[in-house]
Image (tube, rainbow, N blue to C red):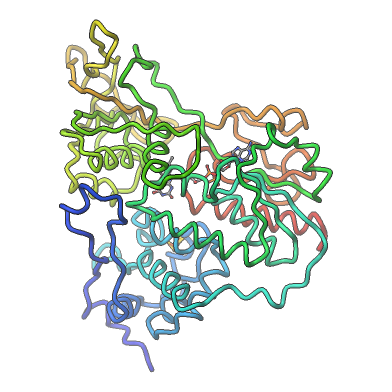
Length: 469
Ligand code: FAD
Ligand code: SF4
């Protein structure tokens, strides 16, 4: 059947329905419902099928977007799922958590005037549906090479690497210190954005494909790097980026001040009952909560505090809304759920009472000056504009930088001035040690799920070329 190229004029962009605000404020369930079959086809068929699709260029894994939208629009779900998996190792995850407004959908030709095609929601629908209908990746034609690679880190980078390796006949053995796979997808991003059942199903699928997981194993502590090099033909490092950036505020370790990631991990493990003994649950019930920072991590903390029953949840950010680093969609979701945003406020110090408990944060108003190294305008404090924001709990979410990895440095693997692993070798993702490859946040610094997947996949191609398979 010929496609109606004017569908975008006749059918408006529609996003999947969200759960009611009342439910969202007290439940950790994913907020977006799925498309209905017919609704998904109507939305997929809005695609113009551009000859030179900007969406594909802007997507970090260069998904064949117009091609699988066409298949989805024709109801050919298995073929569409197959095509999605040619370029992306976790398409159902990206459909949920990519900041599409900044990536594929932001580049859609229809974006400004007619509303972009709902690329992310269709991607999620068609992979979820294919899995529910029993579709699984077919590796029956893969010839095994007898080679194996140790993948350190079961986050998006490690999983992306393992996926490409196993499809090319190399046995990946994935090590992670956590009891489940996913990295920050499981121990970071809350269920209301990404249900943890998604990664459980992925673990089954990857295991059936031939990826071996050795979980609850910390490399450098439970097993040495020399043992891994002896057992495997090459190594991939996808250990992420976990050292919290400090604000240099007074009383930063006072009672009632929390670091963002341990707070989120404590909440997830509490909700899900994961046996991770380092997780510490903190409830914000009945408290006035102030979150410092404006990225994805800050949004997740704010929305977790709302769901835990905090009485007031505020976000203080030193730039304006336009200059926030995270996804605009998630800022809007947080606002709808009751978060108050306070822009152009820079924290100066944490105030405490006589018992050492936090009572609030002293802030100063800012205006935006010239751009800094990140290209965003630098906040400049306005003299005499200080004020105290009262709070019973403060969560610090200023981002992360890579932590030093001593066992890697002893092998001569170089890092840059910000502690990121250097990968300038002859093959994609190759470090200063010829057998060791790396990718994801450990190489880029804190970034996105989809860029970590892209780097893991590219490094796998580098490993395959290095092993001359
Ligand atoms: P990680 O996901 O961090 O995985 C690294 C893995 O390595 C972990 O499982 C860790 O346990 C393991 N590891 C580390 N050291 C060792 C060791 N020595 N031995 C064994 N295992 C080890 N991105 C988006 O695109 N959209 C979002 O909505 C979004 N929200 C976010 C919310 C939060 C709270 C945070 C913190 C980040 C968010 N991000 C988001 C960013 C995204 O999660 C990361 O960029 C991505 O997960 C990086 O993938 P990675 O595989 O490089 O590292
Ligand atoms: Fe868009 Fe992310 Fe899917 Fe690429 S992977 S098409 S950027 S949602």
